[in-house]
Length: 208
Image (cartoon, rainbow, N blue to C red):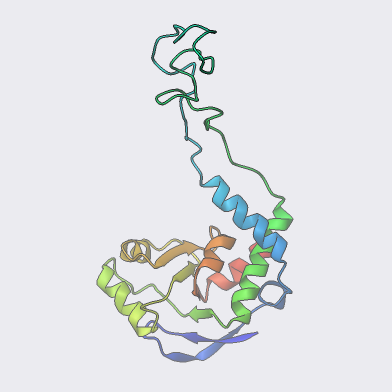
């Protein structure tokens, strides 16, 4: 697949780049995508949810009323989960939601995500971001020049760029990552994936 390379002003240059079919042109594997996205979202969960059960509620353990002869149902103490103010029955407890996936499956999922975006013509190659400053208004100007003001945009850079990171961190619909830190969820969650020209070789090397 051949794509034109754009400059920071949003205009196409004379240069173009060939994307590897082994990464950007495979038949997407939906189940691999599902598993990788599921793992990403699960691993982000803190798992600190907690509700008090009857043994943790403060209160008297005295029997509320006698067992028989009242005409009503038998009752224990006020900490019972069936009473207002009592403990939660089988309430949530802290747990770890993390699970592992094979590296080959994660690579397949990332290739599938890129192939889906390539098929939808949602990948753009940008020439260089070296001249970018740390100001948010400059990054907004870059987004405007690319005509992506109302789009969710993912920038994948070859190396860490502090100016790009600092300039974009206040923009809700923009995320900047490097070629060795992107994930399937970020690629598919973006309506436009912008890769720098130097990051393409790194992406293809990592995924192959």
